[in-house]
Length: 427
Image (tube, rainbow, N blue to C red):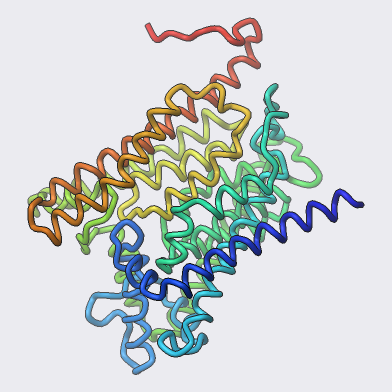
């Protein structure tokens, strides 16, 4: 009983500390939120708070928020922010909303960590599972990650997607399948790409059934059909609510169409924008299909190969999305980096930890400098900034590959215990 009280007090203190830090940054540096909101590393055309304010202004004046081609976000965000007092008069309420969302995300991540799913799933138990950090430590690493803090202060709407994804995973592990599918549907409604997490999330829900699944093929097909219907049923409800709110289906092309066709080529830390700036129009449709096919092709292969550990599949996919999605930001990296500490037990198997850390630190400092040289100083060009984003993508790619290697090596040593600790060479 006393241990539970201590843990509860420690967790409450953690959340309070994170909230106080964010509130202090908001209030002591009043120009910081607007400064970070304008950074391309934090805000993208589909997550920018400034664009949300533009859409909200049109919405409040009975004009379609999608007129003018500036607002590309989900319609239901508008009434949520419309309920808040004026940002110019009482900004504290907007600040508190973003702080609360961050804490809710951390709480979901804490429950994922406490479940022990990363080291001991239903179908696989790692011999290193005892080497893990507590949920409070993992939540702290997420809350005090500079990327997470910058995203919160910059008021990117990606925080809502992050919160929904983490709650979908937490609910799946807890056996609340319907809640997990609804959370995933909400995340997909906001950002579209989380829908690719559906296959591994169904596997996670299937393994966590209460009572456990019988393994009959018919049972698996029935369960999958129910989960798919739950997701698309929730999406249908959200779309219908959006239609009633806006009075048309225009939002589909203005939100999801922009991501599918990359019609807004604003610079970001992703790989798509510069490629399609230089692309001839006659080849544009072909390469759009190739890029989307590449992004979605990882889902099937990882889900089959790592069937025993669906949470690993979700984590690796989040890392892949942070690199290859059309409009990535540091918020996507913060979510992936928040999930990585769950695999503390395989950290000794990582091969490129120093290189990965060095590359990420290198790009964090040089990225803003190169962007300044290009946009403000005029002494550089787009190649400067795109080159550093390629290095950023390289660092995250190395982390994804190294984590996949560590997890597969851990599985292999369970299958062949005599090979534990021996060096592996590629021939």
